[in-house]
Length: 80
Image (cartoon, helix red, strand yellow):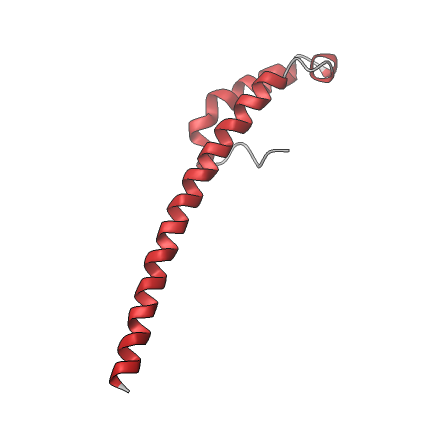
């Protein structure tokens, strides 16, 4: 199972999404026989890489915010 595909966060994987959609449009038997598995695996890898980038960015932002909060509390403790 993959996340919602057509969002602003998944622009880098657009070509792979289109390829998977085209494969799925070929019909039920095409999908059920595993003919779309390669496209799905490539898309999953791309989405995983994009999610990793987002998580890294968020993790770094949280670390900066925590440092600012710690510094603010340190200033409060020193001035109390």
